[in-house]
Image (cartoon, rainbow over all chains, first blue to last red; front, side, top):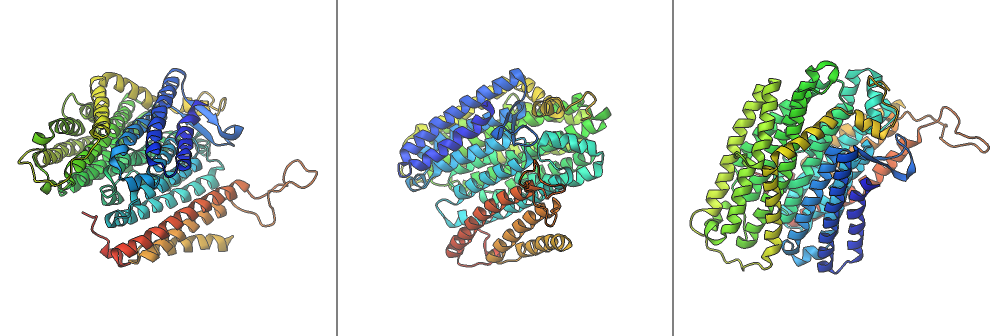
Length: 514
Length: 114
């Protein structure tokens, strides 16, 4: 029952916002209250999953594998929590960060609908159901992206819409083929039936369209251009929401299907994921170096950091492929734990950096580095928050990104995948360079002349930024606990016995045969 | 069946071809075609049987075997509804974009690129 709430709360609230049409301020306050509820629900869910194992719910009372199953394991539950935290920060920032016209045209309702769809994708245990959540998430994001209808928004949206729809179609075709081959769409049932099929080539062929579709959603190389072309065009608060969550849904889905369902030919998939990861990191960071706008730089860095998450997944698959009988080796657990740690850290820090970009834009009216400068004198507090978040992102020792990268690099060395480790370290250095570029040009130097009227309600901007920065600090200070958590999440993801047992009780015989 | 399977291929090919044209309208046509291709693929791949609907005869407990798989039709129905909504959104989007940018040549849509 608890597992349905992360979807129900925001979706019902979104419908309620539509009922409050015309009263923008009420909607915004209502959205904040809703996201507070979501955080509460997510914490309760995570607590329950930590104590009792995966939680399931069969929608409509139809037992798995016939009905639609919702399931939250540790990985899913922590993603739901992060969604709620980002949602809360964005809902508060929206109060001062949206124009009255935008707020009057359903901004709050769309944000809530999107949060519900994202939570749905994280707790869904059914392939077609995941497709439906993806579409709901995309539709909300399309409207959020284009609301206001400026030329840049429309141009960016065309690229965003085209590539995301292309990926949806590939996903849908993949779902059709999987159903035709196995007669089920329930992920746990699918895992058992594909193993029973005993035809690894066919399983991998079925996996291919799904993996391609998720990789496009995750903005992995080569089809990532929709992201940097569109993320800097909507209001900063929308960018922050997209930057924190959308691509991570793709990464989460990749982790889910490769570890749970398509684990027949891990070596092959591992190579594909590792190559993609390396190229994604490099193209993202090199793209960022040529940019001159705060949000454009940050957008390209999303791409490069998706590479780190894929690197963790790739090493984990690589290491299990070598292990006997596919049992999760210590290296594999370490690598996937690194990816989970990285995702947790990345969602918080990235959202925060985009919110800071939004605060800069509110103060100075632009994100163009050529027209910024000297903000360390005029806004020392904001400058401090940026420096902290940027250094966390780049992975300066003792900050949160450092621990995530240490785990990934160690796993990579243990698994013997030296090339990807080398690439990741080089990319890390270039990330630091990019962050320092923003720092020196936006915050140091002579204060640029500005004729932007001082924006009111600073607390709605600084509040969420300080809040997310404290979460980042907590991840850094509590790194050992976060790491223990990530290890346990990785263990349950890599050994899907508990997941399958929770969905289909009694179907998992000792020895893994259905 | 052969006809249906062949049309899936033709639809995918036509959709991909239209996506690669420079015109904004053809882009949307391409996306719609790809959606139809995916829907038809789900339906064909589920192996529908001519004249064997999954209907329970009066007095019987279950539909006659063999019968067509109803779930595939349900999936396609859901997907059609979603693609309808998305197609209408996309059409409004290209109309607004055409009004603002003043051309339907995609090569002119470069101001937000790097």
